[in-house]
Image (cartoon, rainbow, N blue to C red; front, side):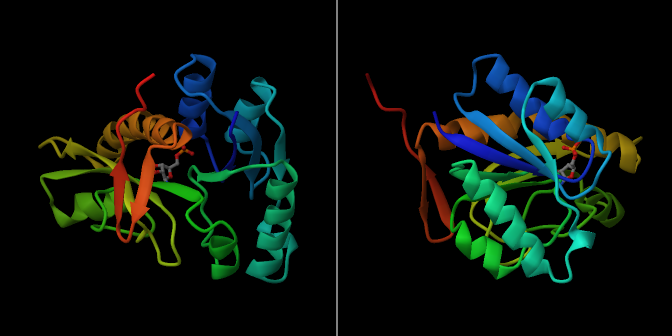
Length: 205
Ligand code: GRF
């Protein structure tokens, strides 16, 4: 079974959606380790509740981003992991990390990329006044939220929305497309060709 590492910085509701999909038999992979760059976050408790090894690596303990990433790589590679899953991980990754896991890092972004990259994608879309926003899963490259797109879900902005209600509606879709993206990856059905990700048909048995 393929192994993944999930990197978090906070509440870990996306992590939970992946755990639930694995436990429910909808996702055939093993979460080998959960790593948080912050201590005391609820995502760590979610991992522990499911007996998933959970490690804190505080970025503030390292003098450079690269030193921090070298420690992450040491842990991740030590677990025999094939894919790094960013689930609300709030650190910018340098080329050191991104190139080490070329095409083997997936992220979720709470907007319809390439619109509203970077932090607070939901608020950026709300403030801009778009009628539709959503969420995007993508492979990670050296840019900020610029890698090849896997799946997207569209979410309407309703007249009575505020940032919070919109973010909650987007999050619900995140919890659907992240496990689905990982399922496609685990079945070997995602083929990257330049900017595009082709989703191959399931192999007929
Ligand atoms: C999500 O909105 C994700 O798209 C963004 O950070 C949030 C993390 O939420 N990158 P959670 O920690 O998974 O609950």
